[in-house]
Image (cartoon, rainbow, N blue to C red; front, side):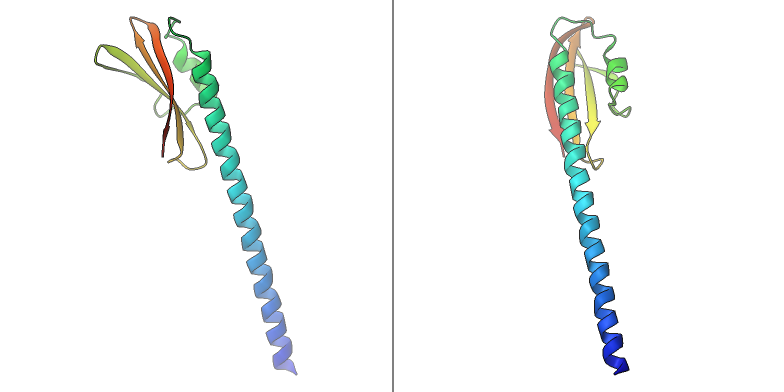
Length: 117
């Protein structure tokens, strides 16, 4: 019967499309987990490498060479301290891993990790 052949080919075609969508979603999710882990690792490593009392001047260049986002790579002043947010972006622009650096008189006072979602 021609109708049954058509119905069978339709079901097989829709099954292939559904399988392709599931595989695509799995690949996309795996990449998302990977990108977030890499960003978190880079932020942690950057914070661990910034020691209190060290020179704060080369930090922006170091961060940009390491792959940090250029969006927040600038010093700002508040409360007598200079602050620098070294940001690494995960899978989405909303998944941001930070190394927050505070400096005073050109010397690092602290470096702490943060996460913005």
